[in-house]
Length: 524
Image 1: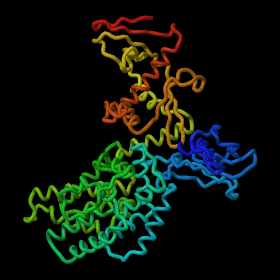
Image 2 (image 1 turned 90 degrees about the horizontal axis):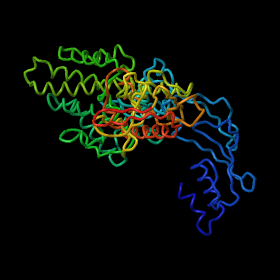
Image 3 (image 1 turned 135 degrees about the vertical axis):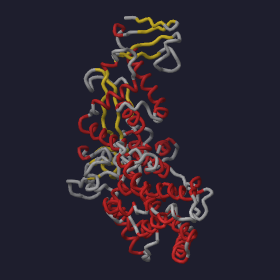
Image 4 (image 1 turned 30 degrees about the horizontal axis):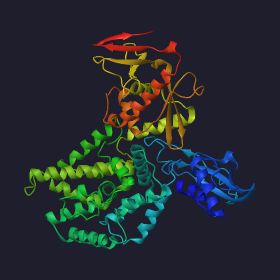
């Protein structure tokens, strides 16, 4: 787009190129720069109908309308949240398109399943259509995948898990990426070139299950299990997870931003809500397979989402593993039983996670969505969360916690070491306040002194997954997390902004600390 804005600088730019340059300049900056665009201008029309993700403009030449431009900012509204129906009627393409608002619903809320996100219907309709085109075979994993995803409960869980992946990775799934992830969930990283070989491979495994017994039958079942949605999403295309594992379909190494985001949301990384109850209950339930029970079948009878996902293939896999890990089975060694129990645990934890929409760290994702709602409605976060963020940015340097001291004559801004000679400036941290506002899909933080909006903020930042996760750990008294390493550069920039703000204040409000051989000296 930057290149488009520069085209009229070249000699011989025609009218179309000048108009295209005007549009590109408007999209980049929101206003027209006179850079050889001639008499082309763009005016916003009915600005009251614009939103965070849609604007409508009219292209004019010499003040006369020439064309209209509809702009949809795809990173301004998530397709994995509910979009309310527009109130206005469609009046044709020459008028602003009717738009609805985006209703953010936390992934762990009771009504998340009842609210259909924008992409939900795409999942259920596509899965249902594909299901009717396939030959029915209860051992076919692709058939099981589309049968599961055609269910409203499972489609809702699938969308919630991907919503978690977007929050964790700080990315935004486009319409095209969500369709690619749907294909990944049904067929893996398949392409027209390997669809035939995948079909033949599945048919061979099904025949082995029906015609063989013992070890060949078990391996065929496990291979078919690797094609189920909850395994394809996190393993297929990742060569490192398939290395030295014979019998599995030879996927090509597949890597892209969307898949990397989804793999970060693997329920095995951090299963279930933060209270840990679901994790413990599931682990205890799965342990009963060693007692000859069928835990998955029992969970499906109690959990409607798991019941909608559960397939005859899953049930057959569970029955065979139960027989193999039976202590009375003389043909199964301890090492083999432990390996099968590990595989079964991964299989079931992912299955339950996908069916319920529990991404890794789903409690942090849930809190991020709540923070977005608070920022959108009141431009405030909860008091506890605001204090936790302030503790990270400006940790108290005194016993009362009213002040924070930072170096300001060094290459880096930090809290300093009293054993080293250095000069530091104090910040009255109890005078700072953390406010927030929702800008499209972002939560922008502002650290201010005085009333909100009266003066430019002392510092700004984005509230992303890692900053929120660290704040929640401080808030709950858990110390710190590995997210601290990722946010430290950003924290240093925020502190530098705070120090710069403090130095710009009246000298009477400055308070310095000079460390001399470990003995601090304060100034008033």
